[in-house]
Length: 308
Image (cartoon, rainbow, N blue to C red; front, side, top):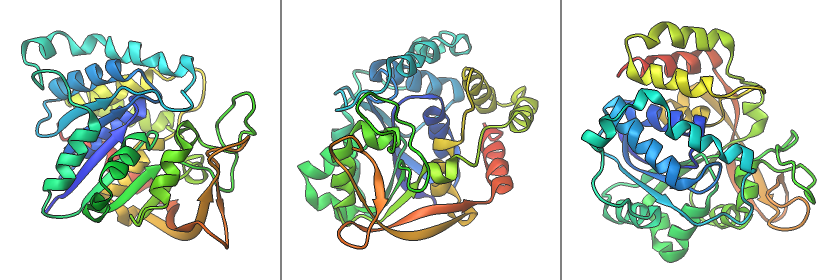
């Protein structure tokens, strides 16, 4: 039986592809998609997500967003990708003729709360953006912690440099956690089992030309492949990695991974806010992805993207 999942993301290229993977995977019952106002402009990312659902022919999950700004907003030049993604010509006007979802989208906190409250079994939450929305849900109703089977989080850098390059920061943090350090701390302090996909792993797994060639080869017949290829083609000028798609894969096919238990904590202020670190005192134990079967992972992506 597929297991129920909530996905909260922040609207960039790999976030959108990770949602498609979760949505199309037979191992997953995707109940809701939330968009946090992180590496995007959430209203544009919401429109893009609705267009994607219509274009690929997805169904079942409610799409929502949280428009509030995170404490440390992402760089403007990163968030501008939202405009480009939202205007992709391949969407056409079908989303206007047959809209995926009627009416104004609800706030993600309300949608996630409903899903958790009404579920007969604990859900998995996959986050590929800041933890802002999930932290709000848990703060508003702490009893919902018991309704979460586990959280799989794309975030953090432990034994590698971070990717934050902001004035006043020492560069030790990864952006999803730096965007809202207090939100990650709140999740870390909960009793929810956590799996982290950190830069330590993703730095070893770039999106290669060989993989993209295989994707292009199957794109002619499959809309999901066409869309994924088009989204990855928007990334130019720097090396791109399988950040969020690896995180989706951890929910779909955990057997591809080897995890290492670590006791970690995080800084919520100062020049290293958002940094996570191992500790003997304080903090808590989490599962950190240490290894991934690269070939098996890429085969998984290609097979799912060829299914629709």
